[in-house]
Amino acid sequence: MKTNWIIIFFILYPLISPAQSKIVLPMQDGIICYEKDIKAAENLSRDELFNRALKWAKNSFPLSVASVKTANEITGEIEGNGVFKIVTSSSGNYYLIKFAVHIIVNDGKYTVKMTDLYEKPIEKGISNEYSKIGYRWWDYRQGKPWSPEDQVLFSQIDVHITGLLTALQREMTSPSAAPKFKVLALYTTTVESDHVDFAKDAIRFYRKMAAKDDFVFDTTTNWKNLNDEGLKKYQVVIWLNDFPQNETQRQAFEHYMKNGGAWLGFHVAGYNDQYTKWPWFVDFFGGAVFYNNNWPPLPARLIVDDNHHPATRHLPSAYISTLNEWYGWKPSPRENKDIKVLITLDPSNYPLGKKDIIRNGDIPVVWTNTRYNMLYMNMGHGDQIFNSATQNQLFEDAVIWLGTKSKKQ
Ligand code: ZN
Image (cartoon, rainbow, N blue to C red; front, top):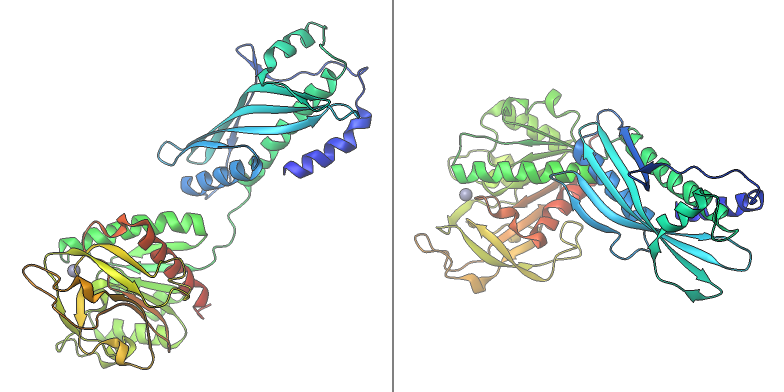
């Protein structure tokens, strides 16, 4: 944006002469103030609007230090400073204009205010301090400009600020881009309360992410939606804290996965034992059968086996995960040639637990079956799972990887 306006300025410059009429800039309470209430594009969530406004602020003022001072998602307020440059004469003199930006995003609309203008003249290479532009503006309006360049200065201030406002308006009123992919997250509210807490946190986390990363995130507690028709429009299916309960749902899921759909399972979603009697799932899951767990839930050190994979590429080679109930498996999915283990419980955690203790074993925590578009993550117990920024990056990258990899149209 900035570059464009500088180019336009050079086109306009020869047309502006001191003979032109006085400039009228909008004022409020005696100072220059541009304020606009603008209706946003329909169907854009407040989160989406907030992210767009923030993007505009960051892109418009890339040169100013701390251009965005506050960005509060809860109040929808963004405050910062913008700086732009105005060349006023062919001798190379120019002004830096600094001003305050304040945006408040609401449902379906937003208000933007640009005020508190300061000028900093740079004359023949001599830099002055910033001072309130109000002094110069006052005299200009009284017909006593400080310099013949005032006319150009004020008209260019108007051009710049109006241009910035137009760019913001364009950002906030353009229709939503087609989402990159659609995710359906299934969960149950009548299971173990720690598993319900996790599902609720996950939904909050992924909703926010969906607005930021342009995908659709739908949720349901109705597992009957696990049928061909219900899955048709989704590229990714997530099981947050449960699994299909009957043959019909199981078959629909198998069909979905065999046809290129993608799956992300958390924690208990991968639970299976001798009573499960779903051989297809056990094979899909890499042969891993639930063996043991630690109790109570505890944080653990995890080894990242491969941090070049798209899902783990932002992770360090090891990190401390948040408090979780960790599952052990027998056999370990690592023994399956189709399984690629991405993260493993570090044996240095053993003995892990107080009541139920994991004492040994090779315990993969995150893995994928390379024959499918699937990823399993053992995290998913309790309300602290999303307390690690490092690990949150894994949750984000995992969904983006699966959404992009899914063959489901
Ligand atoms: Zn659990």
